[in-house]
Image 1 (spheres, rainbow, N blue to C red):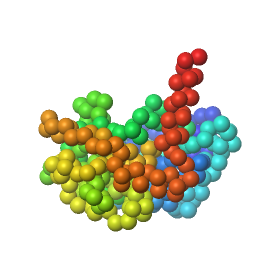
Image 2 (image 1 turned 30 degrees about the vertical axis):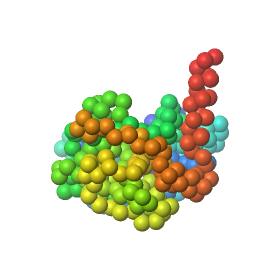
Image 3 (image 1 turned 90 degrees about the horizontal axis):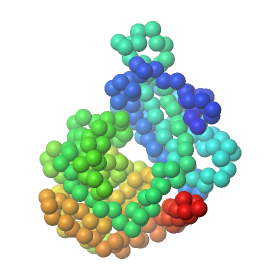
Image 4 (image 1 turned 45 degrees about the vertical axis):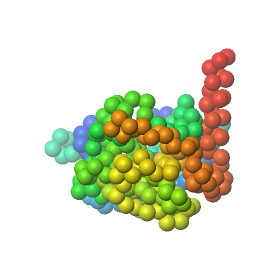
Length: 300
């Protein structure tokens, strides 16, 4: 199901020009959301991200923030009515400047914003084991530096993420910036814990909505330069991203050395418990239940 420029599409998909700037040039900004107990998590922060991306990339839009937030909630409600047995949803808001005149001089389809929606369980299927710990590796693929994009822009330039994932195999690749400092996972932020203090990279990474939420739960987070060696020596580490929330890091491989962590450490456990309380949903248990249901269904 999609919302695109004011219209909800159910049985058919909205048409996008093959000359669209997002299609040809990865010239778009987006933000991906989820629900907890069918309530959208951090809706305003995600909508703010879309409009910050539009501003930074000079993508015009005729819509305001409230219009997009309301359209998002209308789409979630429409999906709930149509598929009442689905408990949680994953959505994606995307903005593009439309067809490029060079490639489609007579195409009058201008800038557009779309919102897609599908069951969250599709994203998490078979991955509930990550709540027991994520195995990670420092990648030799470099993060895009801040000089190219502001940290507030979630953009479509992702080929370096795909390359890093291919090289990392089953592990989560952790990218570093041009100066060798740790930056981000391919779609998640990283944090390390010393005692009760949390540090997360300050540069060459997307400013994460979920990491900001961790700061609300914990108090001050230190945003600083993080060397891989410092990450190898911390007490515990975790990752944050919208679909999973918070995940403990079980191991980190760096230059052939392997560091294992207690999984999860006390700070990560406490943050997970606070997160569950704040959203009123035990999301790790929920993901495990979905995987158990799928496994039972496949055994029949």
